[in-house]
Image (cartoon, rainbow, N blue to C red):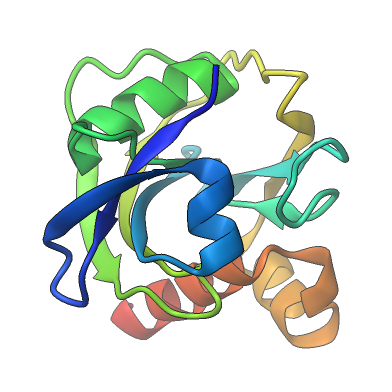
Length: 166
């Protein structure tokens, strides 16, 4: 079944609907949500995108990242995606950190970024994720500087915005 997303304007107001293929092919503005999962030591869990993904396969990404379905809100999306992608059930909406405006790095997605803390266990969705791993902040920052091609562009942007908030 083909995914359908809300198409939005520059103010993030819904103006229509389109398929996943259409929004990516035509560069239409749409929505996504990212979740950063931290452990008690301050490390962040990253997922490596499956080689089957249509966008940025084989690259490290936020702990959870996914499109907001048509008619769904950002908060609903991140709770759903956390379960679908890494098998964690969030009892409530996680902490909202910041919103990123749609741009080239986000693939024309307005993106809300959330944070939660968990030690797992995690059950990665093998269709979407090839592996998961814990990284220190310094390790992620080093990758952003020295090997940006190993990261999804949206995650690199999210990480840089997170560091500016500290």
